[in-house]
Length: 151
Length: 163
Image 1 (tube, rainbow over the protein chains, first blue to last red):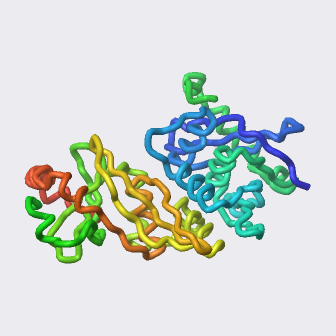
Image 2: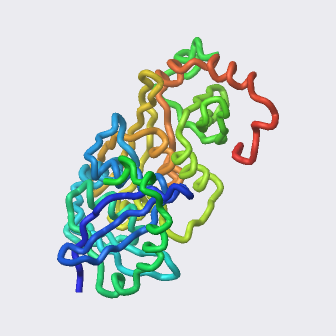
C-alpha cells in the first residue's frame, strides 16, 4: 500500500557534506530519513522555503522543461531500498501516456515540491528503512548543529 | 582578438562551439568551461560553480554513475517522451551572468527553454547536441580577461580536470 509522505525538513550533517531529508508519513509517526548530496539537499531546501533564484537552478530547469513540453508530473514514489540505496519513480503524463521514470529520491522530491505533487512510499520501504542509523546519527548531533538550516 | 569578429565570420550570427576543457580557477574557487569554435579562432570561457562542474566533467570523461544524476534524469524524461534536444545556444552575457537556451523538438513543434549555460552544456554533452554561442556573446566577453587570468596561472594549477 502506498503511504503519503510529507517533507519535514533538511538537516545538514556537520561532519560530512551530506544532508538528510526527513519525510514523515502523513498519518503516523514513522519518519523516513534519506541521505542526499549537498546540491540535491539545497534544491529541496530552496523549494521548501519558496526561494526563487535569479537564474533557474537545475531542478527549476527540469520543471520548466516539463511545463514547456506540456507534460504533467502526477506523483513520485520512493519504491525500494537496495544496499542502502533508495530508488524512486517519477510518474509523468506525456503525450497521452503515463510514464514511470527511474530517479534518485532526491531528484524526485526536489521535482515533487516544485510541481506540488504528492510523494509516496510503500510499507516495505518504511519497514526496511535504516531507522537505527538515524537515531545514532541524531544522538551524535549537538544542539548547535540545528541552526536556521533546520526547517 | 575578436575586434573584427563580424567580418571574420561573415554571414553568421552564431558559431558552433566545442568544449575544450574544464579548468579550476583557484582565485575564485570556481571552474571555467573553455569553449572554442571549430576553427579555433574564438574562445569563450564560462565561469561555473563546483557542482555544475561535476555534472560536466562526468559527461566529458564518460563516468558512469550507478544511479542517474539530475541531467541523466532530464535526458531520460526527454528520451522516454521522444523529445529531442536540437541544440543549445549561449545567447547573452549580462553583468557577468551568461544566459542560454535549450531548443527541443517534440511532436511537431519546437520549444525553447531558458537555462544557465552550465545546465545547457551538461545536457548537450549527454544527448550529443551541438553547442552554439552567438557572435554577440563571444564579442562581448573580453578575451583579455582570460589572457590576464591565464598569465597568472602556475603549471601546478593544471590538474587532471584540464580535459
